Length: 207
Image 1: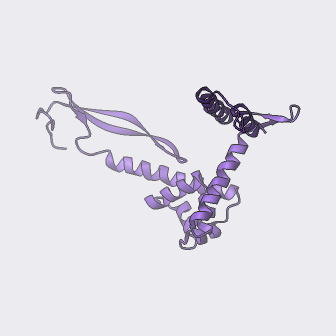
Image 2: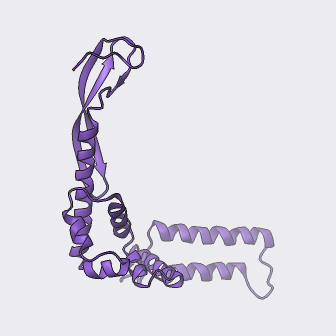
Image 3: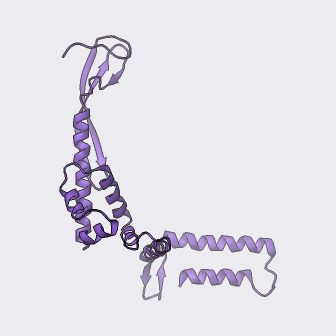
């Protein structure tokens, strides 16, 4: 390799070093690779002057993305998702998911789609309903409600449940809102009571 000069100052006193770089891909794990770096002993400039790392970086990224796709699809199989049904709902060619699972370099669009479906599996049901807005809203709200219920720990002895952080925040917001109304209106009796209304709301949250 011919001698080159520092792109910052023009000096040719360059020192070559190898450093470890850690790459991470959601659902695909992590990988450490060696990165070549040149440092100018005159001005301190540091970088990959010869672009020696580009090929290794891309290969590592492709490997992690392939792992991500494989892990997501294996998770779908464990949850008994039917690949053919998903493909019909999304209107993509048959056996696409199987091909993506075995691909050494999956496309960016395939990786992005599977990440969305992994994070929000209810989107598959939205696709089955032809992306109808009202159906999508119902499915989304239903999933959110089920997630909320899942955060509640029931206590059979107390015939109630122990609230989580989410429910506790909701209770505090109700109390704060009605306490502020009380300060403004002194809770005069015009057919209803701020105190009773607050207690009814809190009871609804705690039931």
